[in-house]
Image (tube, rainbow, N blue to C red; front, side, top):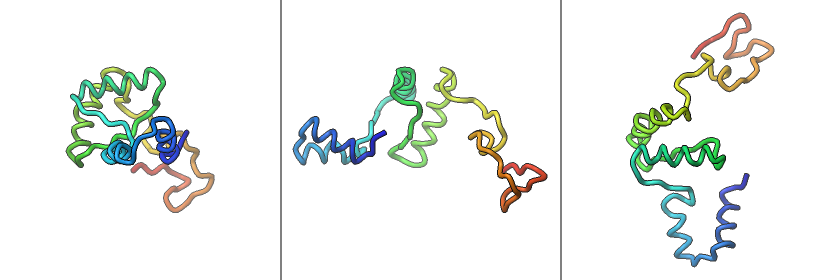
Length: 119
């Protein structure tokens, strides 16, 4: 895994952009992949990247909050679920369970040894 800094250095070495070209390339999305299209087209891109092994997860950064995120959740996620690429439910009832984290050995501030607390 490379840092954002190293990716930019690699880009400079590989493409030798002028300062103006580099600023134009990095200003909008700061070097991240950007996409413009319909929810179905975005689902296609995500599926292609995922199935080819190019990515195993995504950080979604809509340009407009909260409407961009709401649109992604309401329109792209259902399509990914239809394609079997995104879960429709969680198997466990707690975040700890869904992340397969061990339970604390002793009772603590947020966990009582004798019972489970669901948030």
